[in-house]
Image 1 (cartoon, helix red, strand yellow):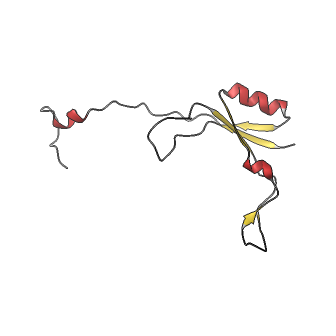
Image 2 (cartoon, rainbow, N blue to C red):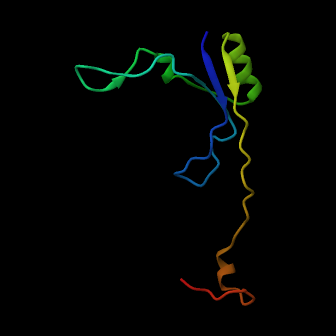
Length: 103
């Protein structure tokens, strides 16, 4: 019986958008450890489930899939995102600023 992890992926560090953060991901836990291949020197294992990453629209869909496959799973709570405060470039030049504008 495999163990799976169900979580909601965080925002990408490479962009400021919130794309693909409203879905849920099912990943399998490693079944065996990685070993060094003596011919190539690369790390690898025979565990192909490590490459599987399934995406679902809702947590309920992800849990239903895990139950249907007979997986033991753990659900990681979704992290709360801070509220985005709208800003305007013109606010840098307001006359009622509390501090001086500098570069």
